[in-house]
Amino acid sequence: MTATGFSSPRPAQVRRLGVVLYAASLRLQKALARYVEDPEHPDQIVILEHNPVFTLGRNATRADILVSDAFLEERGVTVFETDRGGQVTYHGPGQIVVYPICNLRNGREDVGRLVRGLEEAMIRTAADFGVTAGRIEGLTGIWVETPRGPEKLGAIGLHLHRWITTHGIAFNVAPDLAAFQWITPCGITDKGVCSLRSLLGPDAPTWAQAADRLEAHVTQVLALDVQPVPPPSRSVSALTWRRSPRGDHAPEILMMLRQPDQGLWWSSVTGMVDGAEPLEAAAHRELAEETGLTGTLAPLGFTHSFWMDPAVLGLPPGPLRFNTETCFQMEVAPASEVKLSLDEHSEYRWCSMAEAHDLMMWDGSRTALGLLRKLLLG
Image (tube, rainbow, N blue to C red; front, side, top):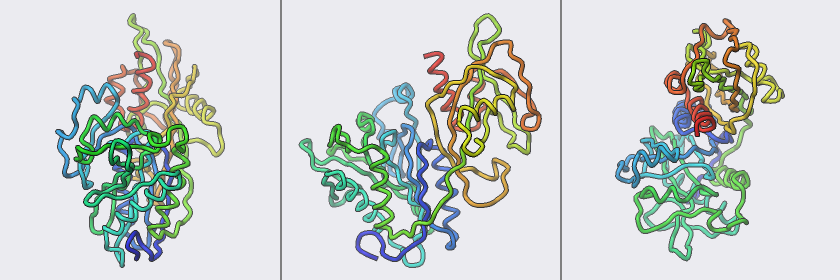
């Protein structure tokens, strides 16, 4: 081991998952932590981007959030309590989040080296784009000297249980920095927060460019022997809706109850993509197979990834499975007849948006419904 990071190689798999909703990331981390407890399994490095959230660490309280719940709801920011160290921080679009789910047993029992290694990876990433970042004694994360004083460019918050790590780092490429003004970030009141975009302006890298460099540095400083991973499977969802045939013409969402061997939960139309099938073609196919409906299909502009829980999905045990879902919406005529496929679903109903939200099991479905609500109702 070196003073920063590790030197003895450790097998690992790196997963670039794109957008992962924060609630789904908590389930994902727990699953991967159980997986890496087996010393025969490689560590898991997950690189992703979150929806706007404030997360409260073990030392945080609601008082660290300086605005009301109504203010946050209006701006689409949710709040989560977590078991990581530290206080409150913000995650959102434009920020790279890296979760190193690592087994530190057998010679790596040194969290300080892990923290310094992660800091070093962020420092090197900043340097790749011409930004000089460093540490401040007594504080975690990495900092940049600016005309306004020291500002944090990257944060760290870890949880350790029986030498298995969860949570990780957040590196600011181009997030909405205004969100940090709504909290006392990491409990620090006399220092600011910056991003590559705030420092470099139009010369700042894209999220993907910065993620490429951060991935390379994380795997190097942690001495990870990177193993191949299969790409996530792909699926589509299509929120299917109609104008109520009653006098108010309010939007109604088609909800279907999956058969017991299919999971026994309510959902709108969903299905897996076949090979290289175009996404819109897959959505039309699933709509025809599950409901017999046709209509005007349009993208919702929302794609997200998640860990596939075999126990919930009725899948056999096996290797880790991840899926990336792209969401659509389709309006059908009010008098359209639903021809339900009983192979997958046992019943259906047309629901108000509020009723559909209450029936939905998954965060991704609720997020897609929120986008549809905004599109239709403003």
